[in-house]
Length: 168
Image (cartoon, rainbow, N blue to C red; front, side):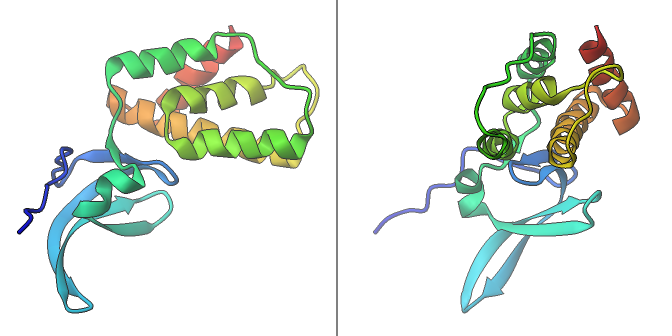
């Protein structure tokens, strides 16, 4: 007879969490639901920006990569990454775009900050392609939403903070 191991990450209703492929969401409820004849404990996470609700079985939380908002050291590492020199590889855009997407979907704030830094364009520099702009805005939004929750400020203030760091 085996006992079920409960995940080490305990989430509470009202708490902000990061789902790697969707960004920052808020746990609205932890409920039990019967699905296909078996009872599951589900974490209900709302993503207001996307008007989306995910129900994640508590047993799968670690597998999908759901995590709490980053610690101060990780956020500081991400913000200091923005100050670095952009690293743009000389490979085809499609390959770079795929790497950027993978970094964004990893949910790692430092990796997301690398994408923001590498794709950031000052107003007086060359134009960005549409796909470059889309990836940049997605990365900026993901990073800003986590910084906003961490700093307990609005998304606009977090965006401004990030853009101020990049402009220096």
